Length: 161
Image (cartoon, rainbow, N blue to C red; front, side):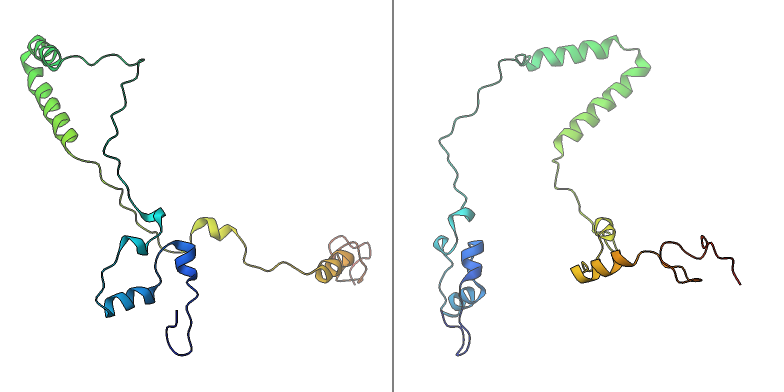
């Protein structure tokens, strides 16, 4: 597809990602044409099968107790408590019901400032060439005092002048 006189689109984005190229969007807008499902790869389609049946409960789980039984147990427990503990018990039940009514949303992600720690440990220096590796391995440690290879100034057998 030709974009301008000197530019040609190879549709690399469309073929690799399954999404239309930007110029396709521009052309559709310019021609006042709608965006269709066929413009996207099937990978991006959301198909919902409405005929599926719910999964049966696991055999290893206990059957759920009827709600009336649970409410009766809560009421009995409440009545057995001393009067000074009944108020906190009611507050705890109220908080439990409030907490259950709230939906859990996605976590809030904040980006920290500065360089990421993981990439700080990696080095950005280049790999030495084979010539540079051979030159550095062959030389060894050279003494700054007598200029001989194999030791440094601190371990030099010749006393300093």
